[in-house]
Length: 260
Ligand SMILES: [Zn+2]
Image 1 (cartoon, rainbow, N blue to C red):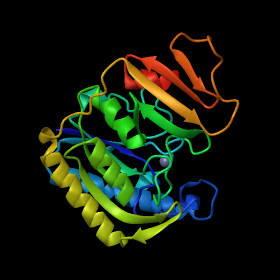
Image 2: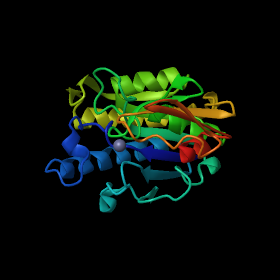
Image 3: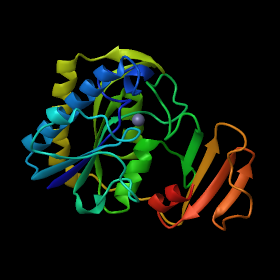
């Protein structure tokens, strides 16, 4: 079995303020360390569950946050820009783990909630259903036949994952109290939980169905500020809904995202 782990930063254990995920902030160095520890805990759990290989993608911002010299030597790591595909070669894997994920934009009492860009994206829908990054990435893997088998993050992210992906294993490493605050597990407890959940997830991967979004895929985006909509009539697959909202239609979730 081959597992792909995609890693965001806002849902990492020990992280609850924006400075910890922002390169240049004094708290960022600690955030990177916590991120690397969660990755190693997850890789440990995958191998304990009997997988043959693990590839881990650093997917927060520009993708340069892992402490490379401290990473588990058994896995391989994708860093930096990935080109056309959000998760390179995802179709060749047997399961996807969403590590360190966060709830969708607008979720109350969710740590560092947003969808793709807190500066630009207010709300996002896939085929009429409000969707965050958990659903988007589960759907991109799902259209290649790959199930999302585990997610980690705060309680709101875990609930969102369970609603979108029946049967997914979730590691709730913190409880959100506000956008920038929560009740956190200790490092040791969080890492043990992530390891145990990864082992459970790889062992029950075959029982979890890939998320299927039926084509044609319609992605609707409401933006935060005025003046950010495409020009009306410029592209045939774009439909303007109102002054801050537009839709694109595509053959797949990946293509719809590319067209936004
Ligand atoms: Zn992020």
